[in-house]
Amino acid sequence: MSDICIQNNCNIPAMFNGECALHCNKSDYQTDKMNGKLKEFYDDLEYHIRKNVLKNSSEEPKKEIASGKYAQENLPTKKQKIIHLRQIKFPERDPRDEFDFFKLLKQFKGIHFDDSTIYFGSINLPNVQLFFQDCIFLNDWSIHSFLMIEDVTERTIFQNCVFQGAVTSASPESAIDKLEIESYLFNDCTFKCQVIFHRGTYLKSIFFNSEGFIQKICNLHIENCEFKERLLLNKSEIEVLKIQNMEFEGKVELKECDTKYTLISNVNFKSLFDAYKTKFNQFKMNRSIFDDFSGFEKCEFGCVGSTSLEKIEFEYVTFLNFTNFRKAKFYSGLDFEHTNLKESPNFLNAEINYKNTNRETFRIIKHSFDKIGNQIEANKYFALEMKKYKEELKAKNGFSAEKAVLWLNESISNFGSSIFTPLSLMLVTAIIYYFLILGYENNYVYKIYEPLNEYIISISKNLNALAKGIPPYGRFLKEGMEFVTLIYHIFFLTFTWHFIVAVKRCTKR
Image (cartoon, rainbow, N blue to C red; front, side, top):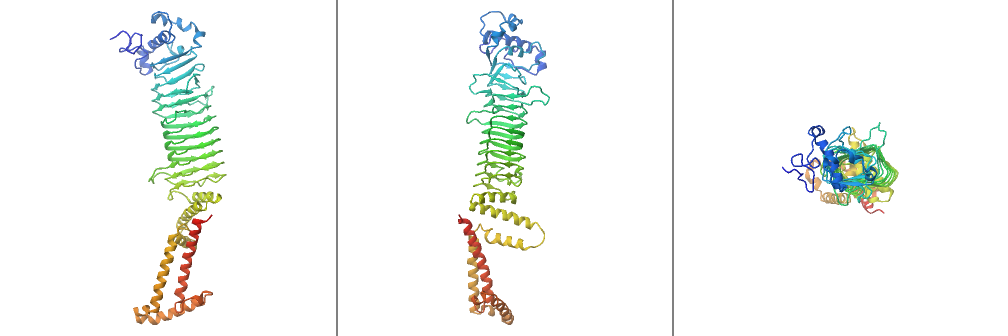
């Protein structure tokens, strides 16, 4: 086994299977403390900083450098330096230890962690600037009020990092220092577990990813936070997204995302909200307010062909400005009944599952098109509204004239939305009447069963007399077939009226 660490360019003695304490794999805190890794890591890190980072020309051996004298010398000089620590595996720590390596780090102006593995769960050095690049965080990680290194190109704290455990920024209610983040946090990072932001003030967006980067998060929960500027979640794949009990002062962008479950509850969007082309598998929003424009253009809600998902709900949601649902698709239905609208929403070319949508939702959409003069789309949703109304009446026991009228309207012209059905009925009625005239003129009815002729003649005379007595139709009815002609006129005129209504609704300006 070599006496020097096998890592490239490392001149530190190997103590752990051919590697020094900086580069060897770490375990939990108790194990590393018992086998001497934590004490050795402190000494190796101090030696590495002096010999390889600060390029100190002194040739003292490691044991003299680690004696403690170095930690106190030239402190004002070190406070002006930003050191670069690369390819180091940082262990778990306890601030009560004499060999806690944070005592070394806090002596510098800034620390640049590069391509390193992080075992410890948080870093809280209020006066030290930080930047993590290409690092792997193996355990749960807690966010504090970090200072960012000033010359970082992407203006973020974490760049291209991988978080194997949960990421949280929970600030306890009893905490004296309030969590406040002044810079962007994550740029092109990968999250293997949940990300939770609870309380705290964010002056920038949490995420600031490169264009085209697809971010994947299994669970993102944001609650009781204050966002002074934008929140950017574009092109993210999120299993569970929960945003609750908070206010956004800046723009919220949720464009081209894919979420399995989304809950937005008790949230006030003071500025623009844009969810362009996002896919929401399950979606529920309640007790929220949109002060500015809200865009859901080309969004997809629910799954194609799924009937088991709950309908999309906007429960007690207030829209104080224009709302855009143009070309949105609601595969599992829509519940817009309990929304408050100051302006008419835009549902142009939207697709809504009829089965799982209530009548009030169709009425609201119909009214929105009526208000802007789009009669063609308004008529489409009027028909859907009437169908739902018919279903509501059908659920009530007993027969009523209203049920009959709705049934006839739906059967003849689908509430004025079909041209071909009444036109077909007009043609069929005319053909039947034509054959009835032929039968009457050639006495086909009387030849079917002659013993009934007396009864047929008696009944027809009475019905024809009744038909003649109805002004002004009496004089226009065919002689000998007055009653049949009257019935024909009633049906034909009814179908004609439905045809005219349907034509007008398709062409009305």
